[in-house]
Length: 451
Image 1 (cartoon, one colour):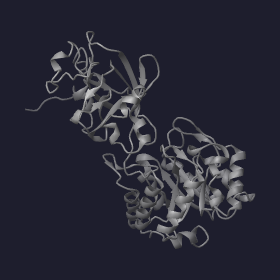
Image 2 (cartoon, rainbow, N blue to C red):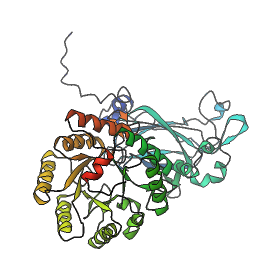
Image 3 (tube, helix red, strand yellow):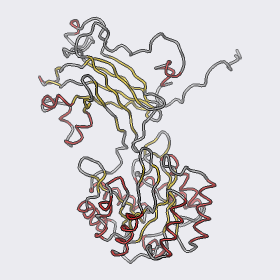
């Protein structure tokens, strides 16, 4: 029969559930249904062992905290026994120890806190011993299939040498991502970093991914490199290997190196410029980033632009702010940036320029007014990538896409490759009847030397 439903709250999105918070942790969603949330008592007052607190965050690929995460934990007690009848020693588990827990990240900070006891080593298969660890299961908005990982403890490194699970990880530096770092006598920090597995990390992976994108129609490759521990790098040797591979497998493609501040400070950011790529990014002013200031002081900007002139590299002006467009025009007028400008609007970076159609249109108007012979492009970050792609293509500009800026095809689907994101832009070009430029045409448009 018909019912008046105006007294009910709207349910959460059905992304990993049915309803992640309302169904699994109603208190976190504002429903006071239980005196205490399920899973809060992993180790009750009678549980033996060292009491510890683990604090952490779940971070997305850009380093921003995911603020609606639900985590479940499963662990042995201090003697290495699980409170489960499949453990032959489960009858020895002390009263009050469940070993199972459920926590919710804070909606504002994204931080979660696990209060428990430190587990003991547990038996593994074939007589092996597993080092002390906590099993972790993660779901959140957009994570439809729960993610599993483990928390190990940095002080148990000797035991890790024989742990059969952690030794399945071939890359030694990645094993450290499973270690909770000791921050106090009984406290630890453990962050989980979510990363689309399609993001290329090594130089070889970058070459393969770029070749796929090149085949789909990409004419410019904007490239960073990483250290062996996956942190950003400005290592000229890695850039040299990347350039050599791209020239071999993507002949004619425009190679653009990043001089951005993620990979170093000061002149180290331009250490790869003597390799003389076709282009290099140049941000001519400072601005805020999600957790820091992206510093581009005038003396560094002048030095980078001078290096680009010396090695006949065309700058791509990354404009995070309207003032960057004005300053690039000034540098063009006085010869510090020779030739016709190529300006890219970057929108959607947290704490910088938001995605706003009026602002975008004013950017375009400003470029046409101050530098009528300039070429321009637009880049949107995260979910706004496709929005900026559409605006740019429809307004007569060029489009940037790729896994650096966005790892999803839509809210529920990870992008399987850079090529898939390029294909999406090609479809937009077809929609607006703007043929995709070949690499030869792109070089001509940007007045670059022939390959």
